[in-house]
Length: 466
Image (cartoon, rainbow, N blue to C red; front, side, top):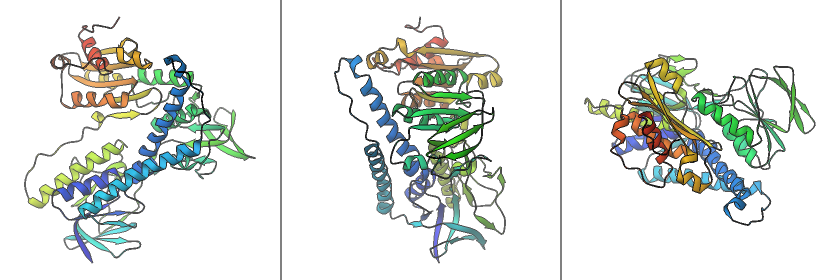
């Protein structure tokens, strides 16, 4: 039986980055992955979706070329080529990660882990199609799976998951996106831009319910203007197949006929490993962890979506690095300074048109926590780079404590919001105050000047805000 110091179960962003970091530390490790390294994010989630986002953005920009003084004939959209490019992007990135593993000689066992048994001071991991292996430490990174509704099940034919919709080879005429969270809004935006009739259905009173209310309202308005038909405060009871379409039965007794439905009502932790002699403690299906990603079983760690924390690839990656760092300290029997995850300060991005990003507390959360706050805003309509680029829809919103103007939240809707939020993440995680930002010179003309002016607005000093 092959023995490793650490075995990582799951090769998604959290698992594979943890393995590489362990290898950098000189710790012998292996990864067990049932499909292919990269997990959902690289193979069927973040990366392929963003490839389609780029295609839809270009298609939208072509339609507005006349406004930029460019005369062009709009060609026919070839969705099969979009899919082919998406697959090429995925293959290039995943094969690149696989090359890193080969170069570092980190074993990747393509199989499923079935059980983890503690025997003496080591764990034996039973594998489905490989010889069993053993380890001193185990990191569980088994991710999550799409959630279904009681009367609406995913069949990947008529009712699709976020994975299934990426396998379509041709565009449907109409699409119902059920769930107005991040994933639902992204897909609604993509396929609407590609000419599909899109219906976005959200059970809650508003879309993007976890984001700042002001930003969510602006996005809903923007999506409606692009032609997306949005219904909130309504659910789906089930569907009936009728010829080449499906008929959705709504909770208000209305009906909606569409060619395809996309179910985006969240994800649930994927964990079906048996542990002996003790079982892992779970809460609502998620593995319970401490600040070091340790579970209730000594030397077993858990990271990523399976922990039920903020379900983002970069959350999993950071958790994996913290787990690797803690294992190093355990092996070396040394006290080390360990990073601590502040989940509310992890940046969150929604790749719609316009983009949405956030970090830290929403205005409502800030009031609940600190009572007295200040809010600074700056619109992209007053930003030179946004004006030159023809994309001025949106604003930057900065939230600070009233007493010392420490920045505790940043929310952006507008051009390149997902890139800009890194600045907010740095400021918030380093506990920066508004007056400290005065030392920083922001380049002109750039979109980031909107961040500077929103922070200046906290002090009533924004130069260009009317």
